[in-house]
Image (cartoon, rainbow, N blue to C red):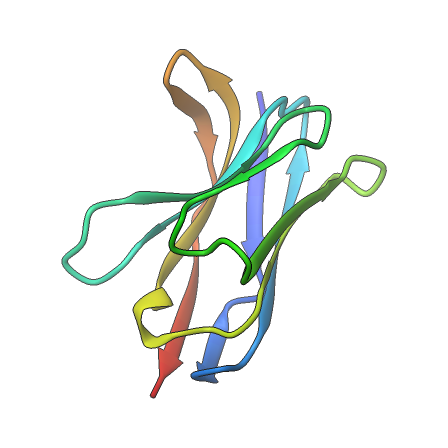
Length: 114
């Protein structure tokens, strides 16, 4: 069993930055950040393997950085140069099983104004 609790969301102006955190318990394995904007499908933002290897969606490459500190049981998403289209509920996910993640957090809202 893995529990996930996100924090760090908020409201910023375009060009601003935020850092999301996801505190986990249990053994999460590979982890990821997803987001779902208003009237949009859920989309993957970034993934990180249990070894720390990251991958990013094209829409956030060069602006977002995913990292993990297993000693602190925390997953991070550093978001820079935020754009209005980044506005969404952001979720962390853990334990890749097949093509999906088994455990999900409750989400943290990010709102970017122009």
